[in-house]
Amino acid sequence: MQQTQGNKGHTSVAASYHITDIESAINYWREQWPTPSGEPLAPPLAALAEVYARMAVQGHHACDTLPPAALDAWLAWYDTTPDTPCIAICSTSQGDEVCKGCGRTFEEVQHWPGMQPVEKRDTWHRITLEGDAWRFTKYAERAQE
Image 1 (cartoon, rainbow, N blue to C red):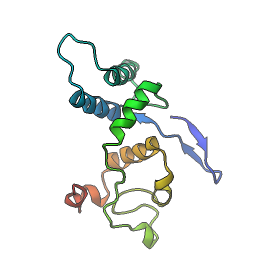
Image 2: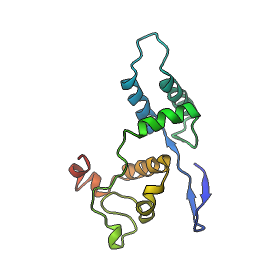
Image 3: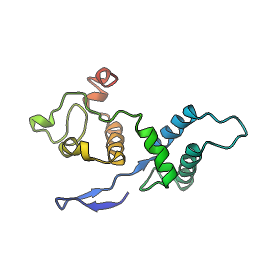
Image 4: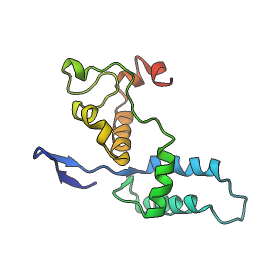
């Protein structure tokens, strides 16, 4: 991941495409465009599989960019995912720096509508790994709706 200078002078980490999302996108495309054994992969699958293979061989869990065909395939998968981790219990409105409901920071909640898809997925990845927001514990059933 790259470090970038934020708009308020804070150093932040640039968003990355995580291998788990690449794998999920591959599985999405496998369902959309099944490939008979021995046949070439569908173009979206081939583009994502190449990225996935390089990441696996190099031992990388994330990458900063995707080739255009892989990005198009990733974005098509992304459009099928939930946009926000919000479960309608926002403690940042009460002054918390991190929302107890979804796990996003105050800044992430405020800037969510303007964030790029990779930034949103990066946030999803982080809050899922942390797993301590109420969406993953106390109100997990609410997040499934």
